[in-house]
Image 1 (cartoon, rainbow, N blue to C red):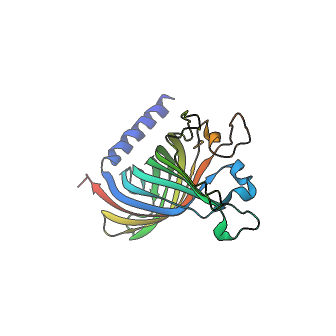
Image 2: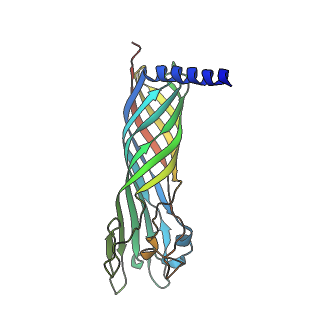
Image 3: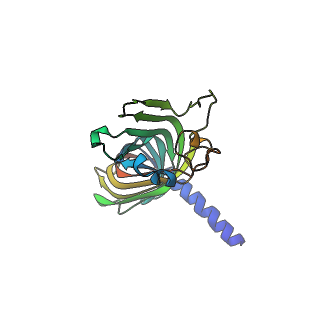
Length: 248
């Protein structure tokens, strides 16, 4: 057991030594199709049909290269998830259907393990996986009513109040998710590279808070209970990295 402990400590020290030699900085952008998944929303039928929606991540990429092929990526990103909806009522044209959307914005801190192929090659495989941590910065709900009632609605969901003026907690301020990216990197030279990766992400914790049923359809009335909701997005990550090698 003592020998195993010494081996692990030695491995960690070696890893940290390599990490100091490969500071990685860059920028990245991920456009994609986004979804806000909730079982009760899917069960709403003609009142709530899902439409194509688009989200994105953009920001600064930072990391350490433990070795030539293994590293840790982090950074600070702005992330936006959106879900569009429409009604599907009988005896109405498509233009006459009500449309609405939910939009959530976050500051994201990813912590991704990075694996790449042969660094001597101009092109190689590139893979990243790990958790991301989202801090809610904005939430919006907008409803465009095409009926004769014209009951258009726009709400700031971070400061939502019910009809009595009581503030309600609709969305979680902190959400944990998982990011998976796979693709390739094209090296301009030994220090610079451009990467292209298929991007998949999903939240692991409920994005909605305990009182979200005050706004969205709820099977628990009058207790306003609601099934968990999860943010999901698939897209393409395009980025640029510059590696500062401290060994030179």
